[in-house]
Every structure is written in structure tokens, then in C-alpha cells.
Length: 450
Image (cartoon, rainbow, N blue to C red; front, side, top):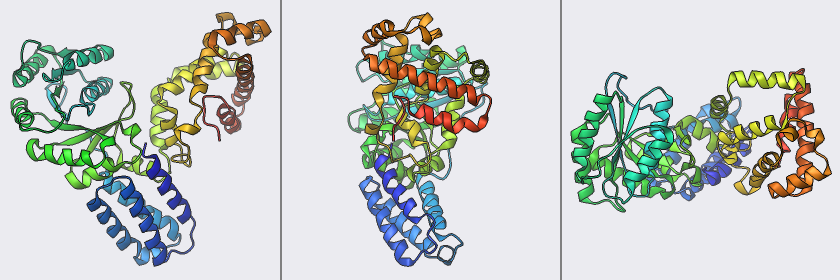
């Protein structure tokens, strides 16, 4: 996400780092680079001007020009300005207590990912201990009700629907009554969109909002539409009065114009971003963390949070015991591959690592490697996974054929496994070898190669 912007800002930060002297000329040249980067990222012109003027004004103060480390101080100013542009701090949903109902109204144009965002939000709230109800109130788009029903079943969340009416207000009202009777504390209403904004849609949304009195009225916007998303948000806000925004397809947005313009132009915070196709690919929007990624500084906090969600403490302890006993098997290796996959795309993980964000593109990642390794291990018998030493030449040929790979690739995986196993055994006795383990893992086909 935001690859081009991150690459440009990363270069700027590196050029400033460690400078013993910052002059007014340095400042003007750097700000001009930033200005061009923001315009190329499709950031609103008014936002760019405001950013440039305030950065120059603060950077030319004596605090920077005479600071102990002027370069770092200037970078800090740029970072603070980006954070402010993105919304200062993370905003949480304004939900009522679990003993009453909180209605969340989702709005947006057709194709913005509204229905998908509804089920992702429901999955997140369920994980947080809430009891959500999804409401299929898009009575215009063909198959919208069926789509939400399928997504609801996928995450184990009920969907309220009425197939015998076109009255969106009635469906919303009945859904709230159903939620009260069945103990649902959050009602997420997926409303109808259009290919473009029209008066009929706005009038219907106004009636629905008046009927259910939502605690949150959230616009779902496609991040890839850039400034168009900002214009859409302004129009919706003027008629419906938004409380916030969900940006979908944020993982595919290489420019970032929508994210960097929305808060300044509309005054409405971005609450969540969609970062992939899976139900769990839905994150709270942290302005400070996104700013850190844009500047090429990574986002270790989010990476650690993802790892904590993926790795169970008891499982980690059990794995450590296996390592110490030298009992680490190919089954264990397969499980680790799958855990890495569940953390998200390799590109999203790389974007969170300081120094790598913006420097490694999707094309630089061996995308097929991890899949090949999985296929090879899955083509082995249980005995072969438990004891790789029995895998002789004939077995390797069979495994290669079964996995659609070559014998050379099977040999490479087994050698990699043996190295990893040896390093893990040493690591369990010596924590100082952790860096070496990471280096070994880095050589695996599914990880980035430098």
C-alpha cells in the first residue's frame, strides 16, 4: 500500500538523516520534493498547500536550524504534519454498552465494497465480544441480500433479511426490533448504493437514518478512487451527516490520495481500512502508524499485534520444547508457513518492517515459493513428514510429481528444513542466535530475497 509515496518519502528521510546542518535552501528543496510526491499521490491541492506552508513555517524556525540534530528534527516535523493530515489519533466506534442496541449505518456507492466491509466489521466486533446482527437493507442491487447471507454464514453471524419488500425503512425498523428480542447489541445495516449519487438514494438514506437513529453513520469508500472518494464523502456528509469513513482496497492503493485528503477536507475520521480479501483483513486506522509506514519507518507495533493474534502462547511453548528435543518436523514447518500466511500478504508484512517499507515491490517477492513449499510437504506421507531421513531418491521423485515441482526443488526444501532445524535447536539453548535463525528463514522460497 502507498508504495510510490513511501518510496519517495523514504528517500527524503534518508537524505535528511544525520545532517549536521539544515539551511533554508535544504528546507525549500525538500518541501518541493514533498509537494510533488503528494500531488502525484492524488492528494487534494488545498491539502498539499496547507501541508507545505505549515511545514516550511515550522521548519524555518530556529528550533530546527539550530537543533542538536537538525536532520532528525526536520523529519519529526514532516512526520507530525502527516499524522495531523491523516487525523491525529485513532478513533474508536462510539458504541453503547452491551445491554442496549447500537446501530451502525453503512453508506456508499455501488462497487465500493460496502457489503464486504459490513461482514468484516461484524467479524471484528464478534471477536471483541459483541453480539452483532447484519441487516440486508440493500433492496436495489440484485443478489445483494444473498451475498450478505453467504458472508454472514461464513463468519457465523446471523443476517436479518426480508425478501418480500422494497421498503428499506421497514426492514431497518424491523431489524432493530428483532435485535432487541434476540439479544444483539450491535446492528450493522448494509444500505443500497447506486452507480452514482442520486436524490432518490439520498432521500431513502435520510428516512432510514431518522428511523433507526444510528450511533455511527459510516461512508464506505474505495481508496483507489483517490480524490473522488473525498468528493463523494463531502456530498454524503452534506445530506446525511457522516460520523466517519471506512476505506476499502487500501492494500491496493499505491498512491494514497484519499487517505491523505479525507480528514482535512471533510473533517471526518477514517475508522477502518480494508487490507485484503479475507474476513480478518480489516484494521483500525492508526494515523501515526500509517505515517510511519509512509516515511519508510515501518510499523512494528502492528506487526507484533498481528503475530500475537496468530501465535498462541501455549503453542509457542510447545514448539520451543520440540526445538530443544530436536523433534521439529516437516509438519511443524508447514504449520509455521501457514501461520505466516494467516498474518496477511507478504507485501503487507514487509511494509511494517523498518527499512523495508517501500523498498521491496510485489515483483521482488517470490510469491510462488511459499505455495510450492506447502505443496511439496503436503505431497509427503505422514511418515515422511515425521522423519525426513527416509525420503530417498524414489520418494523425492514421487513427491516432486505429486506437488507439480522438480526433484531439485524438493531437495532444496529438505536442505532448508535441515538447516532450520539445526539452527532452531541451537537457538533454544542460545537466544543470541536469533538473528541467525531469521537469516535462515529469509532464505526460504516464500520469503523476500534481497
